Amino acid sequence: MDSDKTALEQLNKADFWAPLKDKATYRIRYLTTGGCYDYSVYKLMADVVNFNNKTTLADADTLLSGSSGRGDCIALFDIDESNLSASYATPKELATAFGDQAKLIKANKNCAIFAPRVVYVENEDEVYGANDIALPCSLHFLLCAAKAQENYAEWYAAAGYTRGIANKTIKYTTYNFGDLVINTLAPREPNSYIGDNGKAINLILNERGSYYLWGNRTAASLDKNGLKFSHFLNIRQLCTTLKQVIWEASRRFTFDPNSDVLWINFVNAVRPTLERMKGDQGIAGYRLSKVETTEKAVLKAIIRIVPIEAVEDFDISIYLEDNVEGLNVEADESEAN
Image (cartoon, rainbow, N blue to C red; front, side):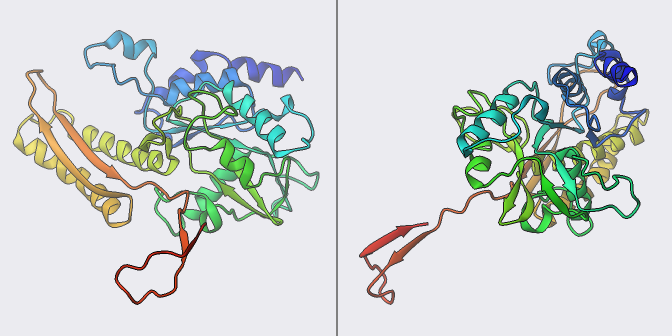
């Protein structure tokens, strides 16, 4: 349709997205296309959310040209299933197909990739109708996050049995994923399915007819060094919250005298959020340090945090012993779990 074509043309323009980089105008937590599966659009969205650490205060041209993004929000992407077959005979073929699609997406640590599409049982307000409309998995993530945050802080992973469920019942998903494919497409190190410097996909698990969002990864590239803090979506959520609090504190005290009183006021504005994170399993600790600078009209500081990632694997062994009363009992047999 002409209207769809016109909308897509607008989404493919950098000037369409550029205003969203302005934090004073827009407070954003998530950025999504709402059902557009165009990978060229995803690249523009990734530019909006990604902050360029090399940007300096003096580099006004960089700020205006838009080469740096926000750094305080998350772009949600979905795999374009129009490029896929209706079904796949083996888990290997399924993993290959979705992994190949993820390789085409230009993304960063401020992004996350989801699949497959979701069909809900019913909707009381008849927004979706009864025609089995397949909706983006990123929408399901938002529904899971909204439900989870009724009882948990935003830095708890919106995934798994407890928080990977929404207030809507899944009728079916366009593709069914079990542990084999899920672990392959969200590995601890790069593999042939996602490629070198590959990006993980957060998938919906079909566990014997029950559906759970089963992934907590950003689209940060994986390398041979394994997982880092930047690979976990719950930590990206935590950083998003902290960055927004820091921005608000900075705005509150802008144009105040640049004195020791300013530093005390800034710390007092930020510390409650850090304490809340520390008290509710978001971080193990933190430190705020003021940095001396010769630049005029600048308060410079470093905030160090020790994030707590969500567990993904349990490495448990069962040992079969003759006796467990002694201090040192050698195992007669072992069964790795």
